[in-house]
Image (cartoon, rainbow, N blue to C red; front, top):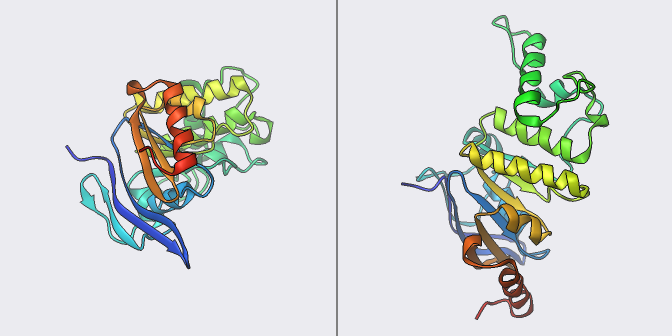
Length: 251
């Protein structure tokens, strides 16, 4: 059975700077990958290649075993890739239902915006997936009133609603309170239970270790190590990361 996503020997340079030096990794269905590495390790460049924002200089990208040439942002989205950035990309002044459907509005058979249907769908998503039980929150509530964790939840549920197969979480716990972080990690578990995949990028290794099935450790544009979380303790992982930071190698 083929992987949902496979990257083979991906290389990318910007002028004299080699950002990626031959990255090979896979993502399987229903798998949470923790992508770790210091600033400058190549994480952001790798994500922009997966989402079609950058094209690799060399290497292959395969979705479901099929090589994809010249991946673009619309094509990546069509293949089921959605990204939830740390700034959450929500319109704070707009209502919840508008944020769920922004840019992908549901329409009637006459091509007009189907606002009652979008409100009803938002109400269902609130109850079934977002954990909004208070009657104070409605589909018309402005996102401005939501906490950081609730905003993350909205962005993740929006991605799932539009058939995302792979959700990329870019520093999702930044600025979240402890309780909000717990809620976010629950969302990640829900995504995995739904058979979807996650790439989880975070500076907080404790959060990543808690939910990841596998850790991919990047260092200076290369995969320095790859580990199943079931095969090593958190302390062992920390030790490996320290070794890579010092020497650039696990040898």
